[in-house]
Image (cartoon, rainbow, N blue to C red; front, side):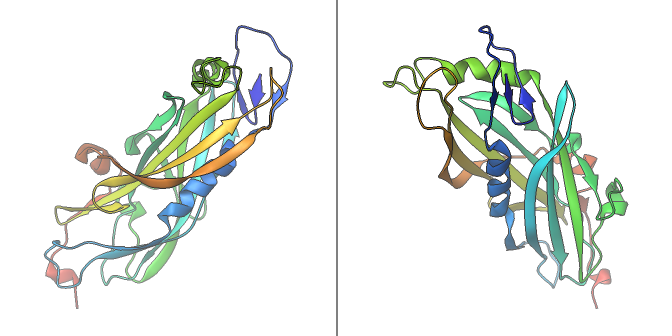
Length: 241
């Protein structure tokens, strides 16, 4: 059984490829990052700010064992000092089962030319905009854990026989400047976007992926994860004009 680039092995053998727009849901969720954000309490005379533009997500390389989730965005630094590339963490939950859950230290970061960057290499210079690509990996075995919940006659409750999945995508960017944390979205939260997925594998019904909207959820990245990817920087007024 395959779902786009994903495959699983349910107990009942069915030779059928099911088209789902999980990639489209991931891409739609990444739109939430776009905007301008600022940090107060850094101790700098110029309040640090960061702008995210053109955020997209798509499938990357697919093997039998793993599937890449590739998120690309332009990060604009209009400050008179460098800022680190934010740490990127998040996950995808399907009917309460984790399809993928990544911490910042598990994510490869690439520049606009496709080179892997880390620490000082990933700093975004003053008054510059640079492209960054974040590559997370999903264990394809997780599809086999989720799929039985999708075709369970109790999903959703009260509608036996419906092939249904409640999918929730969460994601956060975070960086530390002078000991103060800036998260995107702000307030130490993450974007949480919900989608309903229905298929018609064993039953006759309308199939598709329907967006239910995006909100916020509490989400904290451990400081050591930010340090692992160089998303922590200490500046003083000496870097300012």
